[in-house]
Length: 125
Image (cartoon, rainbow, N blue to C red):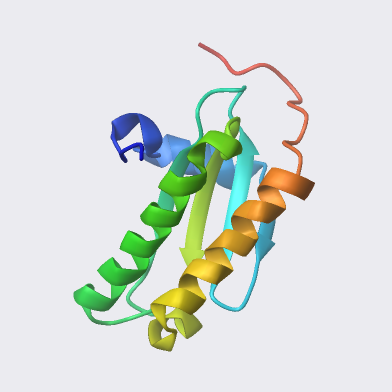
Protein backbone atom coordinates (compact mmCIF):
# COMPACT_ATOMS: atom_id res chain seq x y z
CA UNK A 1 0.00 0.00 0.00
CA UNK A 2 1.45 3.40 -0.92
CA UNK A 3 2.34 5.77 1.88
CA UNK A 4 1.13 9.26 2.60
CA UNK A 5 4.30 11.21 1.90
CA UNK A 6 4.71 14.87 1.09
CA UNK A 7 3.88 14.27 -2.58
CA UNK A 8 0.43 12.97 -1.55
CA UNK A 9 -0.53 16.03 0.51
CA UNK A 10 -1.67 19.57 -0.10
CA UNK A 11 1.00 21.41 1.85
CA UNK A 12 0.41 25.13 1.46
CA UNK A 13 -2.33 27.69 1.74
CA UNK A 14 -1.93 28.30 -2.00
CA UNK A 15 -2.68 24.61 -2.69
CA UNK A 16 -5.89 24.81 -0.65
CA UNK A 17 -6.85 28.15 -2.22
CA UNK A 18 -6.52 26.66 -5.73
CA UNK A 19 -8.94 23.88 -4.82
CA UNK A 20 -11.42 26.25 -3.18
CA UNK A 21 -11.30 28.72 -6.09
CA UNK A 22 -12.59 26.30 -8.74
CA UNK A 23 -13.85 23.14 -7.09
CA UNK A 24 -16.10 20.29 -8.06
CA UNK A 25 -17.73 18.88 -4.96
CA UNK A 26 -19.59 16.01 -3.46
CA UNK A 27 -20.71 15.28 0.04
CA UNK A 28 -22.77 13.28 2.43
CA UNK A 29 -23.82 13.31 6.06
CA UNK A 30 -20.27 13.19 7.43
CA UNK A 31 -18.05 14.89 4.84
CA UNK A 32 -17.85 17.49 2.10
CA UNK A 33 -15.16 16.68 -0.49
CA UNK A 34 -13.95 19.32 -2.94
CA UNK A 35 -11.73 18.52 -5.88
CA UNK A 36 -9.89 20.32 -8.64
CA UNK A 37 -7.89 19.07 -11.58
CA UNK A 38 -4.14 19.13 -11.00
CA UNK A 39 -3.10 18.59 -14.60
CA UNK A 40 -2.88 14.81 -14.54
CA UNK A 41 -0.43 14.52 -11.66
CA UNK A 42 -0.80 12.08 -8.79
CA UNK A 43 -3.74 12.76 -6.51
CA UNK A 44 -3.10 14.89 -3.43
CA UNK A 45 -5.20 15.23 -0.27
CA UNK A 46 -5.86 18.05 2.16
CA UNK A 47 -7.81 17.64 5.40
CA UNK A 48 -9.85 20.13 7.39
CA UNK A 49 -11.24 18.85 10.69
CA UNK A 50 -12.06 21.75 12.98
CA UNK A 51 -12.76 21.91 16.68
CA UNK A 52 -16.44 22.33 15.80
CA UNK A 53 -16.30 18.77 14.51
CA UNK A 54 -14.74 17.43 17.71
CA UNK A 55 -13.24 19.55 20.49
CA UNK A 56 -10.90 16.70 21.45
CA UNK A 57 -7.69 16.25 19.44
CA UNK A 58 -7.99 12.46 19.68
CA UNK A 59 -11.38 12.63 17.92
CA UNK A 60 -10.13 14.93 15.17
CA UNK A 61 -7.09 12.72 14.64
CA UNK A 62 -9.29 9.61 14.35
CA UNK A 63 -11.27 11.24 11.54
CA UNK A 64 -8.10 12.38 9.75
CA UNK A 65 -6.50 8.95 10.10
CA UNK A 66 -9.54 7.29 8.50
CA UNK A 67 -9.58 9.83 5.67
CA UNK A 68 -5.88 9.25 4.94
CA UNK A 69 -6.35 5.48 5.01
CA UNK A 70 -9.22 5.47 2.52
CA UNK A 71 -7.38 7.97 0.29
CA UNK A 72 -4.24 5.78 0.21
CA UNK A 73 -6.36 2.82 -0.88
CA UNK A 74 -7.87 4.79 -3.79
CA UNK A 75 -5.08 7.22 -4.68
CA UNK A 76 -4.11 5.50 -7.93
CA UNK A 77 -7.71 5.75 -9.20
CA UNK A 78 -8.02 9.42 -8.16
CA UNK A 79 -5.12 10.51 -10.36
CA UNK A 80 -5.50 14.04 -11.70
CA UNK A 81 -7.25 15.45 -8.63
CA UNK A 82 -6.30 17.69 -5.73
CA UNK A 83 -8.88 16.92 -3.04
CA UNK A 84 -9.88 18.60 0.22
CA UNK A 85 -11.94 16.69 2.78
CA UNK A 86 -13.96 18.83 5.17
CA UNK A 87 -15.41 16.89 8.08
CA UNK A 88 -18.88 17.77 9.33
CA UNK A 89 -19.84 17.79 13.03
CA UNK A 90 -21.92 14.63 12.56
CA UNK A 91 -18.66 12.72 12.00
CA UNK A 92 -17.81 13.05 15.68
CA UNK A 93 -20.22 10.36 16.86
CA UNK A 94 -20.06 8.12 13.80
CA UNK A 95 -18.54 4.66 13.90
CA UNK A 96 -15.30 4.11 12.01
CA UNK A 97 -17.03 1.80 9.52
CA UNK A 98 -19.65 4.47 8.76
CA UNK A 99 -16.95 7.08 8.17
CA UNK A 100 -15.04 4.73 5.86
CA UNK A 101 -18.21 3.99 3.88
CA UNK A 102 -19.00 7.71 3.59
CA UNK A 103 -15.52 8.49 2.27
CA UNK A 104 -15.57 5.53 -0.13
CA UNK A 105 -18.84 6.91 -1.50
CA UNK A 106 -17.17 10.29 -2.09
CA UNK A 107 -14.13 8.72 -3.77
CA UNK A 108 -16.40 6.67 -6.05
CA UNK A 109 -18.23 9.85 -7.08
CA UNK A 110 -14.93 11.40 -8.15
CA UNK A 111 -13.71 8.21 -9.84
CA UNK A 112 -16.95 7.51 -11.72
CA UNK A 113 -18.93 10.68 -12.13
CA UNK A 114 -17.15 13.91 -11.45
CA UNK A 115 -14.82 15.16 -14.12
CA UNK A 116 -12.09 17.71 -13.53
CA UNK A 117 -13.31 21.12 -14.67
CA UNK A 118 -11.61 22.41 -17.80
CA UNK A 119 -8.88 24.87 -16.95
CA UNK A 120 -9.79 28.40 -18.05
CA UNK A 121 -6.10 29.25 -18.35
CA UNK A 122 -2.84 27.48 -17.85
CA UNK A 123 -1.19 27.79 -14.42
CA UNK A 124 1.70 30.20 -14.22
CA UNK A 125 5.07 28.69 -13.47
